[in-house]
Image 1 (cartoon, helix red, strand yellow):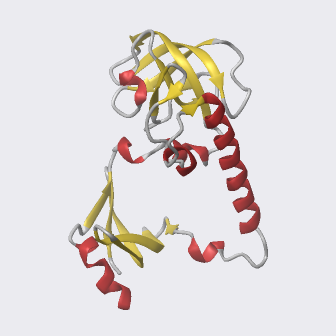
Image 2 (cartoon, helix red, strand yellow; image 1 turned 120 degrees about the vertical axis):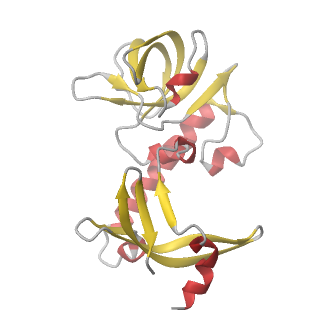
Length: 217
């Protein structure tokens, strides 16, 4: 196939491992999940829970995309090495993502991003272009407005993809659990620092810890 010539640089890394690397999960990634609660908060206290987890007591400053959290002061748990909790120290302010467990407990999802808040300004790239590509400060008001627009865009895309004449199925990645085959209809390739291209790829799962795929087509 002609696209094989385009993925020669990709083939230099024949085994692609999806390890526990949290750097590739921006805030925008969590917008796609309905259970993501975006919260600005102040850290009150932090203490170890067990060998791999810590817990923090936080004061909720603002809940952006929902009205689920009932109390101003809540306790949140998180993994030390696979989330934002390691950065949290008392009297600092942050923006992050919180989930609610089956028993009503709060926790930071794995690889949840964290953004420091300084004088009411959210610091760092969110993965949302409308915020990151602007020269304006990311205030709470701007973040709330853009987050709402982002959610509306996702909802609209879901509606379009359920239409009878939708092409969404042709562009979505698919995975067969029985064969371990991952089909990627569109892969972004960096040909040079200034030239990008797209190609198809088919990969087969070869390992579980970490989850590893090998390119077969």
